[in-house]
Length: 398
Image (cartoon, rainbow, N blue to C red; front, side):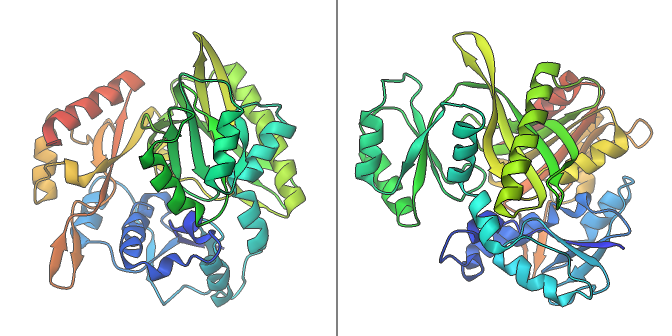
């Protein structure tokens, strides 16, 4: 049975008690834009559910580069004979699945909310993985100050995280035990949404992502690991799928064991379905160490589209998000290709750079730039694709 995919990118925020992201018009514009980034994640015989049609010139651009497009359904219409596959099981997704002829099984909203909470992952780290990085939960500034007061001084500091959040938007680094005024303002607003957690800040040297599915009987299926690219503050900006080299064996083994541990814990809570786990390698006085469970996300992973292309093309693929406000972009895809020069996509070697999200968006009487641009750099090695990224930035960054 073909699938109909819905990229509800506000999934994490929708899990916050009492919050309905659909009431935030600005956020919904961002969510609708992000849905277009998932076009490349969907197979040609499947469908993707969107709130507005993709620009025709963008679809032609992808088709001319050999990327097949899926069927497109425009909300509120759905392909009721297809199998519904959301990005994550938010309240809206659980309600929407009832519009399909054969609704798929899904975990309860309560289970989804519990297992996506930072405190749930911390419990697994402390109890099953014997990790000392999680330092505790707090529901007020006074409780946080007490936690910090009980800590030894750390030159690298700490990080606080909201119970539900994504892309490091609910994170803040604390560099000292004494809270600054800016820290207090930031924390006060977030604590109104519920408890938060405290962790040690680690000097990351590499980010990894483990993806798999938990079956209804708790087995790990479709296990895979790829390298993630983050900002220094931990914000996700890209992913590297290098088919020419493998993840170090010692990391791969620990990540596989961690996936089994997490799957058992998820099944106990009543969750089954897609999972992605953020992990990091950090430097401990010059010794590389792995933290295999940094964040647990009981949903699909944001770089799924890039993985789809990497599986098709092999080699080394680097997918990267850019903030459009920092770029000088030409008005047409032809000019964009010309500006790429020798790095423009070569259909014979299947190497080069491709925009995998639109340069422009169309609205009623309004042509505008999106907030984010997704670029794929496809080459022979990691050095090759990172060199392409550097040249891209030299050409297009302001």
